[in-house]
Length: 382
Image (cartoon, rainbow, N blue to C red):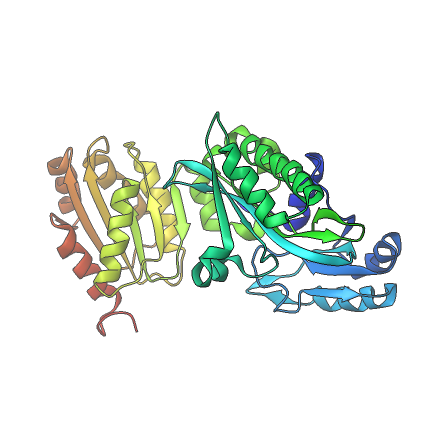
């Protein structure tokens, strides 16, 4: 789960990480007072859950209250990468003398939380990682022991150079790491972390992402969820206990098991198709899950065909078949359907389907080829 910059800054402030004062604005009528509260000279920033705000005109420097009102009004009319701007913040302007990048991220390859530091703050860190990886220092923080002290000290001194800035950076990063751990984050990022005004380090921007699987332990974080991040399909699936992610394709998929689901999506793409979703009904035998899954998929107007791929272990094939037949009775099932059904109680499940005029296949590859052919009778996605 991602949150807005202003929400991340509020969390930063609660952990003692220095930020500039800001005001959240949701209506242009609030702009003048907000700018006046901050002294008139402000940075006006769109609050949308996507990058590239500056390039899209969503970040403006206002020298006066009047400019803040003008820029804020304009920004509230923008749509950035499909996200309408419904909130903006006005932040105290700062005399930025130097910019850095700092971020903690979950690193599965090293089984650690990795701190990334760079003197090249303010730039697109993804491009920097690809084109100039030597400009990013990485230090792993391990559970219980933290970072190697010598590596950590050396990195701080190399990036921040003066003793004062090194000490300030250590204090900020220690707090950022604690925030990362306390809230089960997958990312905490300051870009830029800047030397401003009187030589102090301040988090000019803030970005945070959270591990969805740990949100149950943090209701205060879950309460920050923004409606624009989650589609209605994803909300419905979550309430039904389904793992679901919307994708851009035309083939709806119902699969049991995350690994099998990923493999199925790969095979569909290899066969020339594009999956419309990731959907894992899990290992339980509950016909209602299949019914809910089909309701969600058939509600997507882009879907041209559906693949049900069940490899039954704990999941019983007869329960999958019952769920499918329930769905046929309750919802419009005009879309072409390909069913691959093998495993526990497969004979019982297939008998139920055959009695209803449906056929189940054995092979995954043949099932994928069939569903792609049905979705794209002209020969694959154009």
